[in-house]
Image: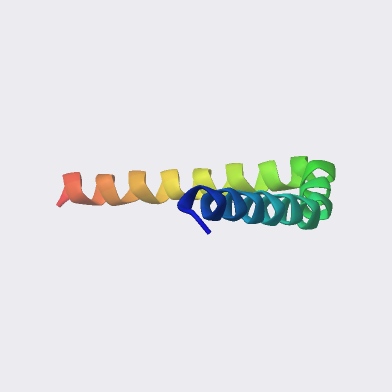
Length: 64
């Protein structure tokens, strides 16, 4: 078997594995798509909390 055929078979295996991963991930992606506003609110809340903690730490550092 020459290298070209080995590379071709490896590319085929990688392509099939990628297709399998996409097929497995579709239900999870649809779940995220359906519940996107809830995830968005959670991300906004987390970012706001982090921003508040950074402001608090900056205020304490400047004040001391």
